[in-house]
Image (tube, rainbow over all chains, first blue to last red; front, side, top):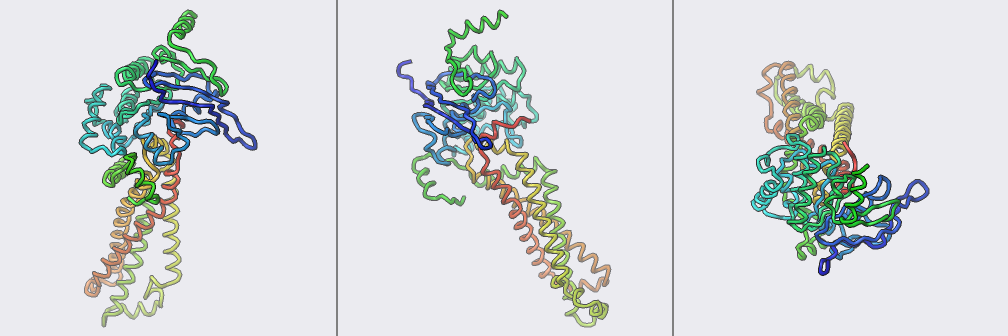
Length: 244
Length: 226
């Protein structure tokens, strides 16, 4: 991995949430480096701090102490404009609940981040159609979300996440609301993107199919990183699960 | 397009790190939102239509009565004079004014209420937009444009309704001689006033809900399962 840059660096991150008179220490010191182009899964039971860590990496939340660097920029130092810019250009978000904007068509959803980024309408439409073609929804560009199935909506969300060629894709339980087959298709799509477009994919997930394609899996337990497994180590433990 | 942080914005313009939402695009999104949520918009509008039509009714009535009083030998003037001050100049009658004020107040409260609900319903949409790079003021602007469009439509409907009812009622009361003494420019002017007032009420009503929406954290988009 020589010469590969660290796209995300989490240093000594702690996060407390005030709760009544006391505080809850959700993250108790996390160190993590993610390389550009990696496919990372963050696993952990609910309440482990997984979502909090995930939100920190996505610039959606700031740490109580420690720092999160995205492209070697400390996101705690960014103002509202720079954060918006970061979300617009550097990071693509995929949600468990798809979050396609209901009043807009598939194409309009995909072009919205490009509108924010100041891309001209013609270029945005052209790029939007290319992206929809890539996720296999070219014919349905003019459909409203209500006319699309869950899997199709998630494909639109994937296309939208890619609109401004981000270097990171953050996927929060992307298969959580999908059936096994459709979920598998989304995972294949994400894996394909991470290989072809060299996008860093970071996902929080419970889905074991997701682990199969991950380069590394980060297990979070009780506010700390329990262990980080590479894929080759992982296939052994997957085998064990399969045998049961 | 106004910015309360011009210096900072210029800095970002220089560095090329700005996010934008062209005005026309925000109007387009606002119109789509209204059309997609027609029923909710309709309910928001209804209180505005009623309040503005009441306002229009009172002011057109005043114009008509003044027209009647200023004209010579109009049948029915004696009766009006007998009925006293309130009937002669409804807009200056304290009781009438108080009712008018209350109706406008109720209207604004109604708008705040429905708009707050609309914001809660749209939390996920707003959070998603913020995740895609929207600034607080994009969201604020979307809501203000929506409220202005709703205000124009609602107030126009209200002004028409109020004016029509007032005209019909007066014609029924005084007969068609009335049309000889009506000051049409005054009536047109009162409708313009009513429409302006309607837009103002609509925008005032949406200010607080829109601020709530704009300050929302993008992380909300991740939460909340429907």
